[in-house]
Image (cartoon, rainbow, N blue to C red; front, side, top):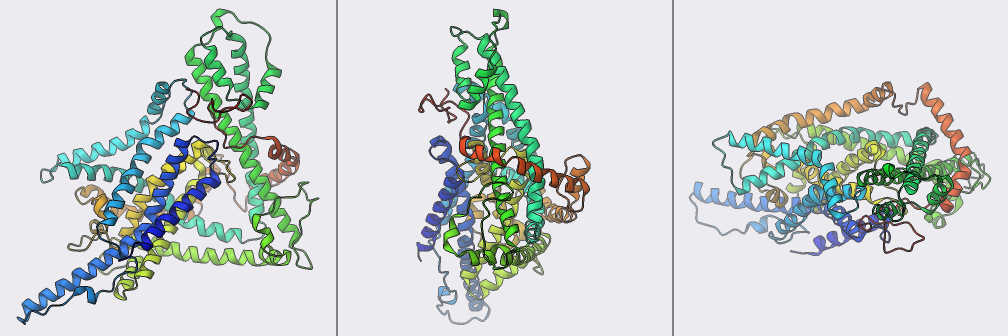
Length: 617
């Protein structure tokens, strides 16, 4: 037995999670509590993905030992022969990553319940806390609880339904372990229903997007289209910010310095960046107001909340616009270099956007000639090859999802792969297949989330430009979707007895900690039938772009290749990007990063607006 694979996986996973958080978050501006909570959420979610393959190989080894012990026992009884001492461990090769049996259950217990506490209790409250406009801790917590009432209500509703179902079944006893199963089942049911929607879209859209990216000019046209829509949203965000600044200017006139609410007003005003203060000073009215027009504390809280949301929306759209224009600039450089006769990649500082785009950090690692071949010749074929690989993998997943409930014969391809590796004692291949499959399921699920961006409220921006609200949402989503996703994977490879209905098989340590849903047949039976049907139906709907066509009919224009409206929006976006090049330069030079927060900060100088969510208490 060796701890090296497990310890290495745990350490490497921590480094990856920390580097990702460093890339997207801002450790120096974000509150330490937020940074630590998000880091734990991301880290524990990644650990589940990495450790599940080790759990699978260890379970297959224990299953082999059990089968050999059972075979020896039957031989001694049936043939009435002299007892022969046989060591089953000599018949079964040990996995290279085998660890003591007690280790994984302890690890899963800590990881699973910590991540569940984060996703259902800590992170939702923290997320609402970041946007609460109250001026006291108690007021912010009260607002957070109210904001999460529907969210918690959906979870409690599932629990109540399961409790009623068990209460109506006299053969089922309601004890401590079953209550734990109800809690786990409610969480997994919530996650599985969401997982159906995400996988149904991602399994088709991920390989299709890669294939479309291989087409010359497609990516650039899609970004022009996106620029047209984003420009409208950016304009609305700026208008919304102007409205809030106007209201704040009125409040600054109405509330005298001696009034008790003036302290709260200063807390609200401290959220404004310096340039917004200057704008408000220019627009400030000099008239006085009567005492009857004094606002209430409730009105100040409302304005505070509106300011937090307006700042978050404005900074998000500014960051998206800056990143979008930068990507468009690079793709235009690639398009201009495609016609190069000497096959050397050159940067045109006098390009259409009027500035020299930033080059990737790896620019110095290879010559301009190699760069030309990669950007202008090889890259499209690499995308096509990757699209084919992902497309085949998606077909494997959909087929296995549709057929994994069929026990005899085994139709799930991943169950076949794992079983074949077990018969050959090829535990390394078994772990590689498990890791790649889980990783691909995660890619498809999370691609969907950050493609639709949930009404554009959340946005992960690199270079430390992601706000706390989006980071918390990402951590919450990872903790919520990863456990049911892994549960679904164990069903695909027939390692969950509530799926296969087989008795006497070894269970993974992960399943032993989570429990089984067999005690609640209404969930387990319904899941076996409707989950694969829903995934297949959503995949077909995505393949024929039914959702995009429906949204276009409702007025939410989507990027459709052969659509006149899309063509008009592409041309409009191209013109907007060209006209806004100078504005982009000013944003990159003067604008504050998106990662600044919307709360005041006593730890910062008076010249800087406050950053942290806990500092205005």
